[in-house]
Amino acid sequence: RKEVEQDPGPFNVPEGATVAFNCTYSNSASQSFFWYRQDCRKEPKLLMSVYSSGNEDGRFTAQLNRASQYISLLIRDSKLSDSATYLCVVREGYSTLTFGKGTMLLVSP
Amino acid sequence: GAVVSQHPSRVICKSGTSVKIECRSLDFQATTMFWYRQFPKKSLMLMATSNEGSKATYEQGVEKDKFLINHASLTLSTLTVTSAHPEDSSFYICSAGSREEGYNSPLHFGNGTRLTVT
Image 1 (tube, rainbow over the protein chains, first blue to last red):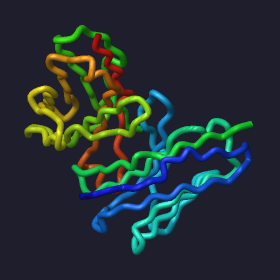
Image 2 (image 1 turned 90 degrees about the vertical axis):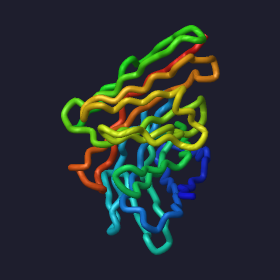
Image 3 (image 1 turned 135 degrees about the vertical axis):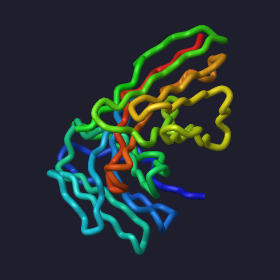
């Protein structure tokens, strides 16, 4: 069974903190990886793709370790608006996409 | 960027009636459509995957006769909840992918339909 595992949290952090989320996946043949964020009662929205060499987008850094089948997301200088559920998503092919259950982040003033 | 339009965004219906949810890709050809369901404070659960012109593949535990999926064109997929019951009340979300975009492209999500069955 293909699985994507995440710590559900919640992660409670103050504004300005750095927080890291981890995700592991079971299918070594997985081809592409993403982080989505989902706000309460809304659809998931793409945060960033995850590339093998690691990639950064402003305060967000994503890393992929294929050998360990591990993906991470680092958020620096947390903002109140970062409060959301972060979903790790793994794509095995055109027709196969697996979501983790999500990690909830709560950023407080 | 690619846009997926989902309609309606909210629907309230009586128990026993059927509800149709539409998902349209506005500026790309959606080769594959995914339908998800999310109960309050729960994670997204894949219900079914459909490729244009072929029958949908349903996940284990999802009744294909209750949740009818049609993906007759490259821009439209529909999910019909037949004989809806209160336990079908949930947030239904579609997402679309295009073969032309390749494996490394993310999926594009509709904005979801909140179904309440009374």
